[in-house]
Image (cartoon, rainbow, N blue to C red; front, side, top):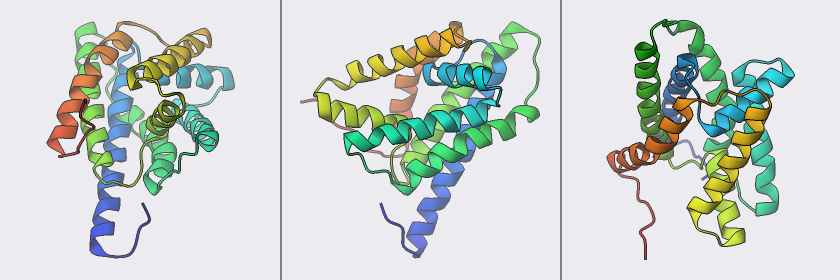
Length: 203
């Protein structure tokens, strides 16, 4: 949605940026735990290894590629879509050096679980700014409209593909990948409800 210069728009923009800032921290926690990462981040890790760049830069590359894929789907990006693509990876790179390097497995598991819960919270926060969906969400919603498939099928198709490609390129697939996949949906639902974001009801 276009932004004006009124107080409400400034507040929405601040909410968006705080959400992306926290999301970067959450993602850094998930990565630093080193017990596996979500499918799209496996893909980003694989690209990072192949190109010899940081995770944050690889994440931006992935987001830009996804935004380009919006074009044939006729999905229009918002301000939030562009900022999401550019800032989350940079914030993740910013936070990683400040996080502890745990040696005990339970400590890394705890950090991963906290990071996963924080991802859901941060997503609800930035979505509540109503300034555009994230690159991956827009891709899935656009594909759903074109193909007419149920959303879960579209999501499974994309996440399965990027997980496989990322793993083949050297991305980390471990128990954390499964933990994230199992719990992120429930945590997201809680976050959306907390921020009073309306979701489509089943007919």
